[in-house]
Image (tube, rainbow, N blue to C red; front, side, top):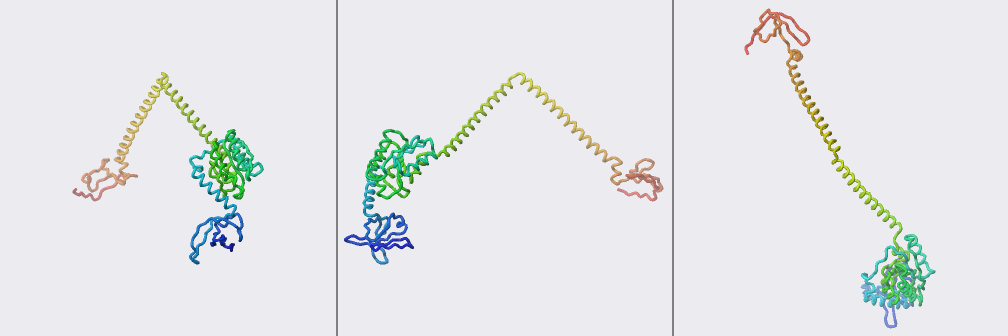
Length: 369
């Protein structure tokens, strides 16, 4: 009663009462937006939440997580009871779950023949892995007969061994509509299956007992088909990579064999007389070249030494001295080396670099050294 929905915040406020008591309830927007039906005054419901005190008014109130109509609430309680029972018995144990085959030849699908489930699975399987065949086992996916038919489908595939993987699925719906997949006999048939089972029941937010006990849970039938089949494009890339690695490996082996053959041929050639003669001939040629090079080097060295001596001798020649700015004094054709060899009024010839001068000396002075 007293239901109020604050559309601006999304929070819901109401009172929950029976014939003996009443308590205020708050459901915040994060939980309220998950409700699949509209609340109204007078509605009989079961509320899941936590009790806490509201300090402003000093009262206890219930903070709701989820709300079910009374009939749905009974189913939810039944669902939780069975879930706890099967959990305790190890039905959900991850270590017992079977791996999904990577390359199935046939996939069994237990679902309605008129729904979108089988079409979605066939479409995805054809696109991803056209080598795989889809085998449909038609069942009702809701109603009183649905759970029995699902169990028969699981037993049929396990007895006939026609398929490598089984997909159990249907589209989304309410808890009542999905209830066939919450039956204990369905859970036990899935658990006893020797063939891996993928559960594709409802939408991503829907969970059933079938999801927990199956070897793999898929959020949608299309995702279930993706889990059950390899991707053709990925396989092609992998095969191409393997082919390239194989070719490279063979090429390396061929190269090694070719190198070994080549080395064997070289070694065989070395052992032949012609090879020995050729080697000796090459050695003689090498010695001849070394001798010629040695003689040339020695000759070049002697020529260089000769040129140095020549340059040195030339530097002491009369012409070289005159080019440096010096002069020679000749008296009667002889070089005057001492001032005492000449006197006043002596006639001498002065030789320069570019000519000569004949002169008579006026004043000759001697200086002791």
